Image (cartoon, rainbow, N blue to C red):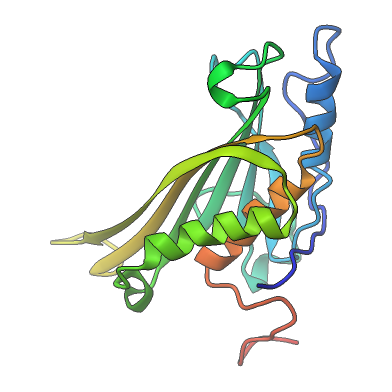
Length: 210
């Protein structure tokens, strides 16, 4: 498994941060999420978090940038062929079911080619990427759980797009230990890179610019 490297892409624009009522621990956690070092093909930006899930929340979006988009690292469009969302939920009262006060909720969606999508072990492999990614990044956590779903869509009649399309979706959550969440973001980006089919860092695909 390759080490996770990182390059910050977009300056943070935290939500629910800066008021007198914002816990210091939450502000530190949000800042650390935006300090994660990501590979250059992945952009990071702030997105709107879900409401009423916790007293404090923050969300980031990660997207795979194609070669022609790498010159515009500020682009963040979750309608591409591979993207992820990572949501931080903070309850200063330490939610009992979380086993802590910092809960991370992850979502990834990516298009797959039929050769990969038809592998019955794909969901198991994708989940292993997450488990190994958290371990490799030394992202301390507890209470990890989630689902991986592989789907196929068939188009009929007068509708654009390929006749068949395949996607993988991952939904996961875990409780982070401490307030430095950079390693958690880096582990999450590792999973996104894998499901998107990016080559290992330092490997240049044939036909691409070095």
